Image 1 (cartoon, rainbow, N blue to C red):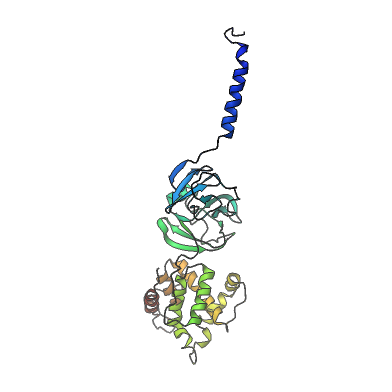
Image 2: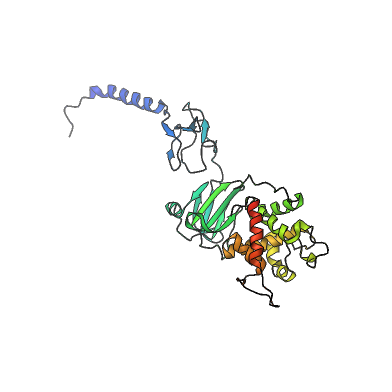
Length: 337
Protein backbone atom coordinates (compact mmCIF):
# COMPACT_ATOMS: atom_id res chain seq x y z
CA UNK A 1 0.00 0.00 0.00
CA UNK A 2 1.27 3.43 -0.97
CA UNK A 3 2.00 5.84 1.87
CA UNK A 4 -0.07 8.87 1.09
CA UNK A 5 2.36 11.14 2.91
CA UNK A 6 5.00 10.35 0.29
CA UNK A 7 5.21 12.92 -2.51
CA UNK A 8 6.75 12.17 -5.93
CA UNK A 9 7.57 15.84 -6.14
CA UNK A 10 10.49 15.13 -3.72
CA UNK A 11 12.15 12.55 -6.00
CA UNK A 12 14.46 14.96 -7.88
CA UNK A 13 15.69 16.43 -4.60
CA UNK A 14 16.31 13.02 -3.07
CA UNK A 15 18.16 11.77 -6.15
CA UNK A 16 20.42 14.78 -6.08
CA UNK A 17 21.12 14.18 -2.40
CA UNK A 18 22.06 10.52 -3.04
CA UNK A 19 24.41 11.53 -5.83
CA UNK A 20 26.03 14.18 -3.62
CA UNK A 21 26.55 11.76 -0.74
CA UNK A 22 27.95 9.08 -3.06
CA UNK A 23 30.39 11.45 -4.68
CA UNK A 24 31.42 12.87 -1.33
CA UNK A 25 32.21 9.53 0.29
CA UNK A 26 33.81 8.01 -2.77
CA UNK A 27 36.13 10.92 -3.34
CA UNK A 28 36.89 11.64 0.29
CA UNK A 29 40.46 10.49 0.94
CA UNK A 30 41.10 8.21 3.90
CA UNK A 31 42.87 10.23 6.50
CA UNK A 32 45.84 8.70 8.30
CA UNK A 33 45.03 7.34 11.74
CA UNK A 34 47.72 8.19 14.27
CA UNK A 35 48.32 4.87 16.04
CA UNK A 36 51.05 5.98 18.41
CA UNK A 37 54.15 3.90 18.93
CA UNK A 38 54.58 0.88 16.66
CA UNK A 39 53.75 -2.44 18.36
CA UNK A 40 53.90 -6.09 17.38
CA UNK A 41 50.73 -8.17 16.94
CA UNK A 42 48.73 -5.12 15.85
CA UNK A 43 46.51 -4.71 12.79
CA UNK A 44 47.47 -1.66 10.70
CA UNK A 45 45.53 -0.19 7.76
CA UNK A 46 46.89 1.70 4.76
CA UNK A 47 47.77 5.31 5.74
CA UNK A 48 47.97 4.57 9.46
CA UNK A 49 50.91 6.37 11.01
CA UNK A 50 53.13 5.17 13.83
CA UNK A 51 56.21 6.39 15.60
CA UNK A 52 59.34 4.26 15.85
CA UNK A 53 62.88 5.15 16.95
CA UNK A 54 62.03 8.85 16.98
CA UNK A 55 60.56 8.94 13.45
CA UNK A 56 57.07 8.78 11.96
CA UNK A 57 56.13 6.08 9.43
CA UNK A 58 53.10 5.64 7.16
CA UNK A 59 51.64 2.22 6.47
CA UNK A 60 51.96 1.20 2.80
CA UNK A 61 50.01 -2.09 3.02
CA UNK A 62 47.45 -3.38 5.48
CA UNK A 63 48.94 -6.08 7.68
CA UNK A 64 49.20 -7.45 11.20
CA UNK A 65 52.61 -6.70 12.62
CA UNK A 66 55.00 -9.26 14.09
CA UNK A 67 58.37 -8.98 15.78
CA UNK A 68 60.91 -8.45 13.02
CA UNK A 69 58.58 -6.29 10.92
CA UNK A 70 59.55 -3.03 12.62
CA UNK A 71 59.15 -0.05 10.25
CA UNK A 72 62.90 0.25 9.72
CA UNK A 73 63.11 -3.41 8.65
CA UNK A 74 60.29 -3.66 6.08
CA UNK A 75 60.13 -0.72 3.64
CA UNK A 76 57.57 -2.75 1.69
CA UNK A 77 55.14 -2.18 4.56
CA UNK A 78 56.18 1.25 5.92
CA UNK A 79 57.45 4.48 4.42
CA UNK A 80 59.21 7.09 6.50
CA UNK A 81 57.16 10.23 7.01
CA UNK A 82 53.64 11.04 8.15
CA UNK A 83 51.94 12.57 5.13
CA UNK A 84 49.17 10.00 5.21
CA UNK A 85 49.51 9.31 1.48
CA UNK A 86 50.55 5.74 0.84
CA UNK A 87 53.05 5.14 -1.95
CA UNK A 88 52.27 2.59 -4.60
CA UNK A 89 52.19 -0.74 -2.76
CA UNK A 90 54.95 -3.22 -3.43
CA UNK A 91 54.98 -6.91 -2.69
CA UNK A 92 55.75 -7.84 0.93
CA UNK A 93 58.94 -9.75 1.68
CA UNK A 94 58.87 -13.20 0.13
CA UNK A 95 59.94 -14.71 3.44
CA UNK A 96 58.25 -13.53 6.60
CA UNK A 97 60.04 -15.73 9.07
CA UNK A 98 60.97 -19.23 10.11
CA UNK A 99 58.33 -21.87 9.42
CA UNK A 100 58.03 -24.86 11.73
CA UNK A 101 56.27 -28.04 10.63
CA UNK A 102 54.61 -30.80 12.64
CA UNK A 103 55.85 -33.53 10.30
CA UNK A 104 59.04 -34.31 8.40
CA UNK A 105 59.52 -33.14 4.82
CA UNK A 106 57.67 -29.89 5.63
CA UNK A 107 54.38 -31.68 6.15
CA UNK A 108 51.46 -31.30 8.54
CA UNK A 109 50.56 -28.14 10.39
CA UNK A 110 52.86 -25.17 9.72
CA UNK A 111 53.45 -22.09 11.88
CA UNK A 112 55.66 -19.15 10.89
CA UNK A 113 57.46 -17.03 13.51
CA UNK A 114 59.40 -13.81 13.06
CA UNK A 115 62.50 -12.59 14.86
CA UNK A 116 62.18 -12.89 18.63
CA UNK A 117 62.52 -15.09 21.71
CA UNK A 118 59.60 -17.43 22.36
CA UNK A 119 58.99 -19.19 25.67
CA UNK A 120 56.66 -22.18 25.81
CA UNK A 121 53.63 -20.05 26.64
CA UNK A 122 54.42 -17.74 23.72
CA UNK A 123 54.80 -20.72 21.39
CA UNK A 124 51.46 -22.05 22.61
CA UNK A 125 49.86 -18.67 21.92
CA UNK A 126 51.18 -18.89 18.34
CA UNK A 127 49.68 -22.36 17.90
CA UNK A 128 52.77 -24.46 18.58
CA UNK A 129 52.29 -27.11 21.29
CA UNK A 130 55.07 -28.33 23.56
CA UNK A 131 57.49 -30.88 22.07
CA UNK A 132 56.30 -30.28 18.54
CA UNK A 133 58.41 -29.87 15.42
CA UNK A 134 59.88 -32.29 12.92
CA UNK A 135 61.12 -30.01 10.15
CA UNK A 136 61.66 -26.29 9.57
CA UNK A 137 62.39 -23.79 6.83
CA UNK A 138 64.96 -21.11 7.67
CA UNK A 139 65.39 -18.03 5.43
CA UNK A 140 68.88 -17.20 4.24
CA UNK A 141 70.79 -15.21 6.86
CA UNK A 142 68.50 -16.26 9.73
CA UNK A 143 69.44 -18.37 12.75
CA UNK A 144 67.15 -20.54 14.89
CA UNK A 145 68.04 -21.83 18.36
CA UNK A 146 65.75 -24.66 19.49
CA UNK A 147 65.77 -25.46 23.22
CA UNK A 148 64.69 -28.71 24.85
CA UNK A 149 63.29 -26.90 27.92
CA UNK A 150 61.16 -23.84 28.54
CA UNK A 151 62.81 -20.45 29.10
CA UNK A 152 65.74 -21.37 26.82
CA UNK A 153 67.07 -24.13 29.03
CA UNK A 154 68.37 -27.62 28.43
CA UNK A 155 70.00 -28.81 25.23
CA UNK A 156 70.19 -26.28 22.40
CA UNK A 157 70.19 -27.09 18.69
CA UNK A 158 71.09 -24.38 16.17
CA UNK A 159 69.85 -24.13 12.58
CA UNK A 160 71.03 -21.69 9.92
CA UNK A 161 69.38 -23.48 7.01
CA UNK A 162 66.24 -25.48 6.34
CA UNK A 163 65.96 -29.08 7.52
CA UNK A 164 63.41 -31.52 6.11
CA UNK A 165 63.98 -33.82 9.10
CA UNK A 166 65.59 -32.70 12.34
CA UNK A 167 66.44 -36.25 13.37
CA UNK A 168 65.45 -38.49 16.24
CA UNK A 169 67.41 -36.50 18.83
CA UNK A 170 65.60 -33.22 18.13
CA UNK A 171 62.23 -34.48 16.85
CA UNK A 172 59.34 -33.35 19.07
CA UNK A 173 61.69 -31.84 21.65
CA UNK A 174 61.13 -28.09 21.16
CA UNK A 175 59.95 -26.15 24.24
CA UNK A 176 61.35 -22.67 23.55
CA UNK A 177 62.97 -20.92 20.60
CA UNK A 178 65.19 -17.95 19.75
CA UNK A 179 65.08 -16.57 16.22
CA UNK A 180 67.41 -13.86 14.95
CA UNK A 181 69.15 -12.64 11.82
CA UNK A 182 72.90 -12.77 11.49
CA UNK A 183 75.25 -14.00 14.20
CA UNK A 184 74.13 -14.32 17.81
CA UNK A 185 77.55 -13.13 18.98
CA UNK A 186 79.10 -10.87 16.33
CA UNK A 187 81.59 -9.47 18.87
CA UNK A 188 83.57 -12.74 19.08
CA UNK A 189 87.20 -12.07 18.21
CA UNK A 190 90.24 -14.26 17.70
CA UNK A 191 92.10 -14.84 20.98
CA UNK A 192 95.55 -13.30 20.71
CA UNK A 193 97.44 -16.56 21.23
CA UNK A 194 95.52 -18.47 18.56
CA UNK A 195 97.34 -18.68 15.18
CA UNK A 196 95.41 -17.17 12.29
CA UNK A 197 95.21 -20.45 10.39
CA UNK A 198 93.72 -22.24 13.41
CA UNK A 199 91.16 -19.46 13.85
CA UNK A 200 90.20 -19.74 10.19
CA UNK A 201 89.70 -23.50 10.52
CA UNK A 202 87.56 -23.15 13.64
CA UNK A 203 85.46 -20.28 12.30
CA UNK A 204 84.75 -22.22 9.12
CA UNK A 205 83.40 -25.05 11.27
CA UNK A 206 81.54 -22.66 13.56
CA UNK A 207 79.77 -21.12 10.58
CA UNK A 208 78.86 -24.58 9.30
CA UNK A 209 77.33 -25.47 12.68
CA UNK A 210 75.72 -22.02 13.08
CA UNK A 211 77.16 -21.37 16.54
CA UNK A 212 77.78 -17.62 16.28
CA UNK A 213 81.50 -17.78 17.13
CA UNK A 214 81.32 -19.46 20.55
CA UNK A 215 82.05 -22.93 19.19
CA UNK A 216 85.17 -21.59 17.48
CA UNK A 217 86.47 -20.47 20.88
CA UNK A 218 85.85 -23.94 22.31
CA UNK A 219 87.57 -25.66 19.40
CA UNK A 220 90.60 -23.39 19.80
CA UNK A 221 90.79 -24.36 23.48
CA UNK A 222 90.66 -28.06 22.56
CA UNK A 223 93.34 -27.68 19.87
CA UNK A 224 95.59 -25.84 22.32
CA UNK A 225 95.29 -28.69 24.83
CA UNK A 226 95.56 -31.51 22.28
CA UNK A 227 98.36 -30.29 20.04
CA UNK A 228 99.54 -26.83 21.14
CA UNK A 229 97.94 -25.43 17.96
CA UNK A 230 99.87 -28.02 15.94
CA UNK A 231 103.31 -27.22 17.36
CA UNK A 232 103.29 -30.39 19.47
CA UNK A 233 102.54 -32.76 16.61
CA UNK A 234 106.00 -33.36 15.08
CA UNK A 235 107.58 -36.37 16.77
CA UNK A 236 104.55 -37.10 18.90
CA UNK A 237 103.40 -40.74 19.08
CA UNK A 238 99.94 -39.44 18.23
CA UNK A 239 101.07 -37.21 15.38
CA UNK A 240 98.89 -39.11 12.96
CA UNK A 241 95.75 -38.07 14.85
CA UNK A 242 95.85 -34.43 13.86
CA UNK A 243 95.17 -31.09 15.52
CA UNK A 244 92.37 -32.44 17.72
CA UNK A 245 94.00 -35.85 18.35
CA UNK A 246 91.06 -37.96 17.24
CA UNK A 247 92.04 -41.61 17.59
CA UNK A 248 92.04 -43.61 14.31
CA UNK A 249 89.36 -46.05 15.43
CA UNK A 250 87.13 -43.19 16.54
CA UNK A 251 87.48 -41.20 13.35
CA UNK A 252 86.85 -44.31 11.25
CA UNK A 253 83.55 -44.75 13.06
CA UNK A 254 82.54 -41.21 12.04
CA UNK A 255 83.57 -41.26 8.37
CA UNK A 256 80.03 -41.63 7.03
CA UNK A 257 78.72 -38.89 9.33
CA UNK A 258 81.55 -36.64 8.21
CA UNK A 259 80.68 -37.15 4.54
CA UNK A 260 77.01 -36.52 5.22
CA UNK A 261 77.64 -33.36 7.24
CA UNK A 262 80.39 -31.77 5.14
CA UNK A 263 79.59 -33.15 1.70
CA UNK A 264 83.02 -34.67 1.06
CA UNK A 265 85.19 -37.62 2.06
CA UNK A 266 87.46 -37.13 5.04
CA UNK A 267 91.07 -36.22 4.19
CA UNK A 268 93.32 -36.78 7.19
CA UNK A 269 96.17 -34.76 5.68
CA UNK A 270 93.92 -31.68 5.65
CA UNK A 271 94.12 -29.67 8.88
CA UNK A 272 90.69 -28.22 8.09
CA UNK A 273 89.24 -31.73 7.93
CA UNK A 274 90.97 -32.63 11.19
CA UNK A 275 89.17 -29.76 12.88
CA UNK A 276 85.89 -30.64 11.17
CA UNK A 277 86.12 -34.25 12.37
CA UNK A 278 86.93 -33.29 15.95
CA UNK A 279 84.17 -30.69 15.94
CA UNK A 280 81.65 -33.23 14.66
CA UNK A 281 82.46 -35.61 17.52
CA UNK A 282 82.64 -32.89 20.18
CA UNK A 283 79.32 -31.37 19.16
CA UNK A 284 77.70 -34.80 19.36
CA UNK A 285 79.01 -35.26 22.90
CA UNK A 286 77.79 -31.82 23.97
CA UNK A 287 74.31 -32.56 22.62
CA UNK A 288 74.23 -36.06 24.09
CA UNK A 289 75.46 -35.14 27.58
CA UNK A 290 73.82 -31.74 27.85
CA UNK A 291 76.61 -29.20 28.38
CA UNK A 292 79.97 -28.04 27.09
CA UNK A 293 81.81 -29.30 30.18
CA UNK A 294 80.23 -32.76 30.08
CA UNK A 295 80.86 -32.89 26.36
CA UNK A 296 84.56 -32.31 27.02
CA UNK A 297 84.60 -35.07 29.64
CA UNK A 298 83.30 -37.63 27.19
CA UNK A 299 85.25 -36.30 24.20
CA UNK A 300 88.36 -37.22 26.17
CA UNK A 301 87.16 -40.18 28.24
CA UNK A 302 84.58 -41.78 25.97
CA UNK A 303 80.83 -42.19 26.36
CA UNK A 304 81.16 -44.52 29.35
CA UNK A 305 83.64 -42.49 31.35
CA UNK A 306 82.95 -42.00 35.05
CA UNK A 307 85.04 -40.62 37.93
CA UNK A 308 87.61 -43.26 38.80
CA UNK A 309 87.45 -45.03 35.43
CA UNK A 310 90.60 -46.78 34.26
CA UNK A 311 91.88 -47.98 30.90
CA UNK A 312 92.65 -51.57 29.93
CA UNK A 313 96.03 -51.30 31.68
CA UNK A 314 94.49 -50.14 34.93
CA UNK A 315 95.63 -46.54 34.51
CA UNK A 316 93.19 -43.82 35.61
CA UNK A 317 91.45 -41.93 32.81
CA UNK A 318 91.78 -38.32 33.95
CA UNK A 319 89.07 -36.85 31.74
CA UNK A 320 88.05 -34.48 34.52
CA UNK A 321 91.51 -32.88 34.54
CA UNK A 322 91.36 -32.59 30.77
CA UNK A 323 87.90 -30.99 30.87
CA UNK A 324 88.94 -28.59 33.63
CA UNK A 325 91.93 -27.37 31.62
CA UNK A 326 90.09 -26.98 28.30
CA UNK A 327 87.03 -25.37 29.86
CA UNK A 328 89.19 -22.83 31.73
CA UNK A 329 90.93 -21.87 28.47
CA UNK A 330 87.60 -21.61 26.67
CA UNK A 331 86.15 -19.32 29.36
CA UNK A 332 89.34 -17.27 29.30
CA UNK A 333 88.76 -16.74 25.59
CA UNK A 334 85.30 -15.38 26.38
CA UNK A 335 83.25 -18.57 26.03
CA UNK A 336 79.62 -18.13 27.08
CA UNK A 337 78.37 -21.66 27.82
